[in-house]
Structures are given as structure tokens and as C-alpha cells.
Image (tube, rainbow, N blue to C red; front, side, top):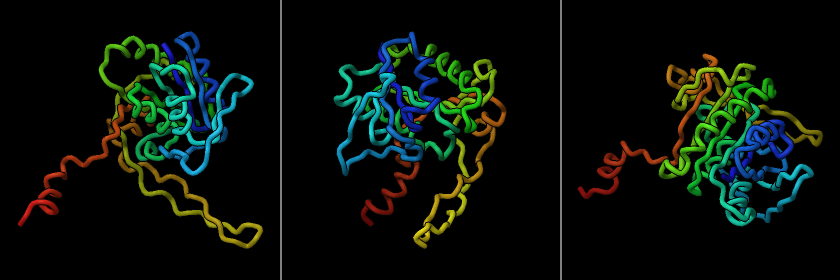
Amino acid sequence: MRILIANDDGYLAPGLAALVKACEGLGELDVVAPEQNASGTSNSLTLNRPLTVHTASNGFLYVNGTPSDCVHLALTGVLPNRPDLVVSGINNGANMGDDTLYSGTVAAAMEGYLFGIPAIAFSQVDKGWQHLDAAARTARDVIERVLPSLRERPGPWLLNINIPNRDDAPRLPRVVTRLGRRHASEPVIRQVNPRGETIYWIGPAGSAREAGEGTDFFAASQGRVSITPLQVDLTDHAALPDWQRLLVTSA
């Protein structure tokens, strides 16, 4: 069994170290992570410059690119062997609802999924790494549960898991959820730099607006571990007939 581990907080992030330690003894481990924090980079690949791969003192490989770059490079030439599972995290903060579209943590796992490899993204609900060891124990238990089925379950799959920052996280109820939705982001933050130029910071994420029972937001608010199966097909299947009539069918 081979496991590829990545993240978006960078190769020095406590969450990555915790996830690597949690995976020890489960198989051969390869770690490929961004050189710097790459949160919010989504599925972007670096195509306008070359990438470099270096080995850190702890043996981790780090790339001067995005989380997707890391997994992509690992799977297309950097690693000598194809992994059986890709895991990403543990992220410093939740990736729920609309966040999954922007998340580098989810993107790293999704890159594995796009290459036909089962993948899991792990995040803590709150920022700050509180009770990270408990989150890591939870992640290990999840991985241990899925490993026996990897060769039996046809096709790749992708899970997005959010773990409350609690010391009893491994004992919390786990629920399979759907993605909730957020309100629009807060307004940009304007500042003036020392040269007198106006600069902008992206505003904070909006609050949850679809957070009812069954959503990842609801599960987290109830102190439960949220497990959301994801897919990549963005097609609006229900709308296909309407667009066919409007734009394709002859009058």
C-alpha cells in the first residue's frame, strides 16, 4: 500500500506533520507539499513558469507551486510508484459548502481523484490547530476503515472530511453530509500602501445560508465529523432539455 500525502498550508504546517504521523505504519508514505502557504488556490496549475522540487530535512518533498501542482507532479514523473490513496491536510480551518471550490486542500485530493486514485481531504472546523492530535487520530481511523476496500470498490472516489477541534474528536458521531451554501463574501478591504497606492484584500467568507440538517455546516455545528462524498461533474443535467430546445432544436 502506498499513500501520497499533500496539503495547501505548506510543507512546514503542523497539520501536514500530524497527518503524516497518523499514516505511519499504514503503508509506504510519500509527502509532496507546497513550499509556501497556498490556501485558496483551488485547482490551479502553474503553466507560466517551471516548477522545482526540493527535499526538506525531514524527507518531505516541497514544490514552489500550488497543491494541485504538487499532486500532479508526483503522479506524472516525480514519484517512481503510483499511490493507492491520496490524502490531503490536515487543513487549518474548515472546507465546507462553497469553500470546497476554492480550497487548495480539496484540490490536492481532487487531483488524485482526477487521475483515478481514491482521495480524502481532511480539515479542522476551526483555525488554530487546537486538538490537532485528536483530529489526526480521527483521520487515521477513517483511513484504516477505507484501506481494505480500495481494491474492491470500482473507480476512484473523493471524500471531504471536516473534524471539530475537540479532544474527543475520534469518539464524535460521524455523519455523511451534503455541501451547504454560504452567503456572498464580505466586501473587499481597502488600504493604502506606503507608496500611496490603493490596495485590496479579499473580504472574509460569507456566513452560512444553507446550513440545515444534512449539510456539512449543520454537522459541524452539532459537534459531529462531517463526511461529504464529492464529484467533479459540473453539468446541470436537469437543464439540458431546456437549453436543447432554446439553442439547438430548429423552430
